[in-house]
Length: 261
Image (tube, rainbow, N blue to C red; front, side, top):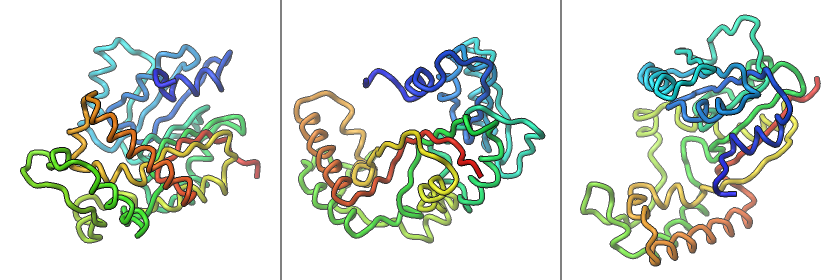
């Protein structure tokens, strides 16, 4: 159902007839996910923790604007934040877990201990591909092959007259200087999840090709013209084939419960 976000899907499927629940969103960013979860009466308390004070202020303003009173935000570093004895029914990482290092230790000794019991849930919507976005040779080869099939007018870079001709791996030095936390230990996410949690659902989201391919040119594809739709359908189908053939997906959506130890 393309009209249903995962917040609604998860809540209706797993939390039906439950009440007085608490949720912790780690790396809450703009606050959109917390606002979406707040619509469901099963949640008494939704907490978001975020490093950016600007994001926190924007999120809090949206709460006032939308008259939401069951969401709170905290400014701080999740790794060192003191939650006292508080535990949660649901913990969410929405495109934030890949910014943490030492993933295995984080999931085992921090996240798992913040869940109330073995019936509590961990939700993951994440990039789990190569560390530091160091794309595989196969990814680069397929992406550059598909880039050549896109008409030139769709390959003009954003706010530029340059045409995108080739995709490369980002330089490690540039990665360290511009965003030192980006995908720092992303390859550890899936094996660490499987070590410490039981999977109720785990769905591949792809991104192996599209993330590389559409960088700097995605603005050309925000229309419903026949040509645009045909290009997108072709690219999406080719990525699906690539993910199936390599049995690797750079993006996943998963719902987990802590393993009994």
